[in-house]
Amino acid sequence: MAVSIREVAQRAGVSVGTVSNVLNRPDAVSDATVDRVRAAIDELGYVRNDAARQLRAGRSSTVGLVVLDAGNPFFTDIARGAEDAAADREVSVLLGNSDERLDREDAYLSLFEEQRVRGVLLSPVSETLTTAQRLREHGTPVVLVDRTAPGSDFSSVAVDDVRGGYIAAHHLLEQGRRRIAFVGGGSLRQVEDRFAGATRAVAEVPGATIERIPTDQLTVLAGRDAGATLVERADRPDAVFAANDLLAVGVMQALVMTADLRIPDDIALIGYDDIDFAASTVVPLSSIRQPAHLIGSRALELLEALVDDPTRAPETIEFEPELVVRASTAG
Image 1 (cartoon, rainbow, N blue to C red):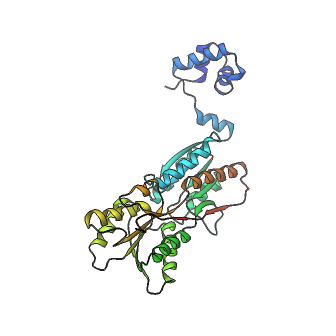
Image 2 (cartoon, rainbow, N blue to C red):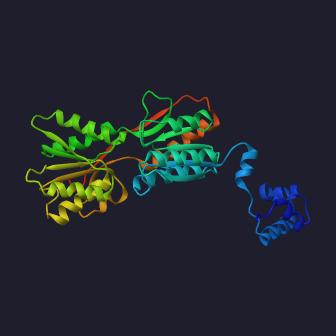
Image 3 (spheres, rainbow, N blue to C red):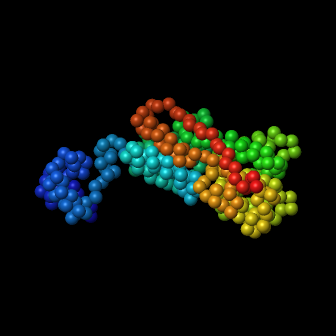
């Protein structure tokens, strides 16, 4: 059974108000009293109900963050950026992994609402933002992360993925590649925008083509499976643009380890995100860099601005992607 603050006060021989001061304003209490109260807390094993305290104060010190794939280092870096910015404000971040499933996203959003978090950062699974809209209507601000929402009134922080896709394909075309395979599927806006940008670049070069190799997920294993289908083909593309670096790593494994194909001589390969180990793969991976840590920190700052002023106009922050060239495209 939980120990109450009243029991601590009785054990220390002080008032409940004095215990509260020790917990929240120890400088207002004598050192001897602080020592006596803390000794009682240790002896009884008292743990204060921080959630109740925050509700009484009218504002939580916790932010919810829901990402598409907590196993993807890109989202880990976003979380770290949000945590660093939150720590400066004495705010904590609770992380939820939707695993690209709408039901799990909705469950986390509902949980965060029940926990009365001060706000939510969300990398949404679909175009439908019904649950996020409900949270806002109930007074919980929401900022979209790694996704813009044109035409909506949600604030967001992301990268221009159409531009990123264009840059990736344009780079491959500049290397003389003309048969590009885009690896990536699903319904995520980010993937569709990257493919749209790549398609635009290919359309500018006569004789160049682009095909799509669909995947159910954006993981190394899914990339390996996609790479295996390319290995078996006689009409292989001469370049691959993977929708993220995890897919690119999987494709690389299939090409190099199972078919002994040379990268980039036989097939050039570029990914997206520029996660930390992109430079450390068996063939250093070219990629489109997103400033993940900065995305997370700016999203947290934007959320805090909405907490302070709920009437603040929606704001879209969109960063420019950056081409990082390594050996997988420029041998």
